[in-house]
Image (cartoon, rainbow, N blue to C red):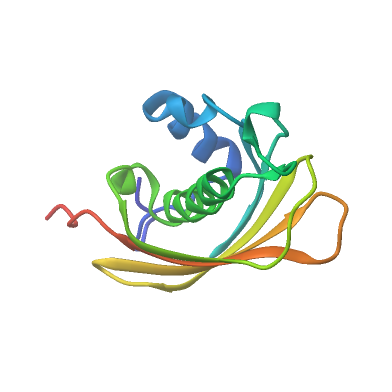
Length: 150
């Protein structure tokens, strides 16, 4: 979809989740269903529901589970900004710093795009345990965007 100026129409959180549910439903499988809680220009908040399968030895949320949450949060923002044309966007790089051990429970991602170019999108994500003020992980991500159709 494009607006009257020829730019992609920004999607709502419900429209993004409809695209995800149609084209990428497996993101909800495994450990921790993801929910797009809010979506605004260049930002999103995503919740990953607690699932006992996400606990690693030592009683904390596993790194791969947190990676999934951060990665999905960035993908959701890109879809929100570019619509269905960005379904084929892919992660090209992600760096995650684990800052503290999250307790078992829902995880929240606060994500924002730093740059949205023609070929690449760059973002950062802060991860929190639900209801706790201290960040448990910080990620930066780069996505390769599909070529624009002419």
